[in-house]
Length: 305
Length: 314
Image (cartoon, rainbow over all chains, first blue to last red; front, side, top):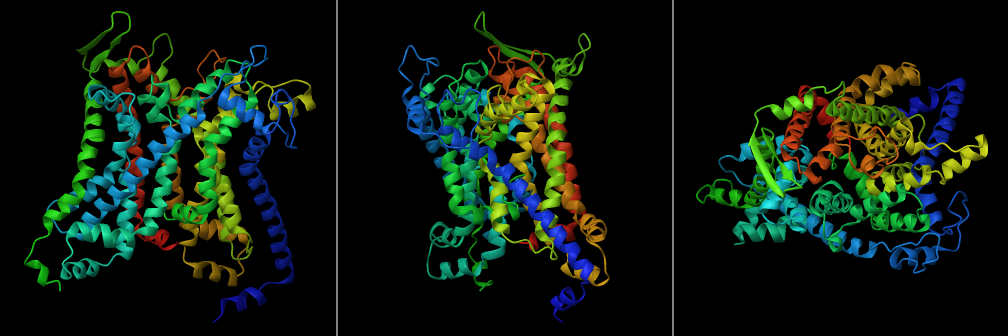
């Protein structure tokens, strides 16, 4: 029987009034929550357009006309010895390029090798397979921070301090991504496909690259995005590894440098807001296009809590 | 077909496919974890004056030092306290907000429109670089920022949020709250949608009020997922670093916003590179996190039907 039948006729007049009230309050609450999530970003965008003198102690929701000026102060500094701020440039473009290199390579390695590991365990029967799977499940919960003393000392011994290798190569072993890929394979990768490929004389490696990977596209897309964002935003590991070479610094490290100058007073807020804006804009743009997949991915437990 | 490939063994391919993962894991995670444990029994560091590295076995000295009180204070406990205070300040409102939002979104009676839009918006802060978000909030709450412009207009005076211990902790907790409530909402929604819908329909036919449905059906059946969300949030909270590190308040004399991981970072990157002490600190954090993870694991295992229904929810 149609359940809507009960919904429509089972409600008395007073119940209906109650629901309407509840609905009104719900929308008000949702409106407040939306403001909470968007307002900081809105103020950020507006402030990038306002004059740096106006940003000292005034507040306005009307955009100004100083976007270009703030951008130039950020990228070049203000080249004015008499300026109140004496702003030095922030190498944010270089930082963004650095972050792009690190995050781009990490996300490719993470997704490819996680898919490969998941495929190995899903498709083949071998001794120790169960152990390998359980092992990965157990290590999934260990936070990376607790091995950082040993990690830094290892990187020092390998003479890899101030290089990108320690930020990129460990991405090959990502337990959480592996787990997601494994679940995806279980739900939508029949082993008959592998059998068929074998009958056609396809070797195992080629089957994975040419047949399995394309079939895993939805899972790969979601994980590529999550891995890129996670690496782009990562602050802890680069803060341990990239300590001396300014040219190699990624965006979060530049943000930290800027924040310490802000806290010591006399900040050029036009420059500060512009740098923040540039640091988050790539992720916001990506999110704008793929928010649907991301929200669904989160619901599936794609992100480690 | 199954019979046929029994003659050829493909087992070696299984190993080949999983080898890169394990090699990289062993080199960059397992060995560092073990050596962290190992160093925790040594007085290991670097003398910035004589430029010499030193390493001397000291047994449990580092642990004793970490856990003992000198002159009535203990850095480990006070940083652990800071971390927990800031976690609680952010996580409690986060769970309440998320629970309310999840109930609103999934309610069959309310039939909220524009769900995609709301979900997209509230999840967004989670993807924004925590370091940048923290710097943005330094701006918003600074002496010349918009919040203080408002406060000044009302009270005639500015409130120096970031120079006040509770002000700074509050702002940090607030940033964490905004960044994570969308994520929690989506997880709880998946949990609620995994509950057998006929229960809600039956309750409605029996004339249960919205509140009754929530306390008698939604909440008890959602409990395992609520516990899971709370504990994973706690594990994340124990690793709190990005936001307080950026907001490191230069003008508070006492370090009221220093977290455990901030101290660990400081021990490693500081001029004297105190790896021994850092190692002992890591082992303690590892033990706490391990205990909590075990709890998560147990709640997941003891209620398999609910976990399954969560998966089905999508």
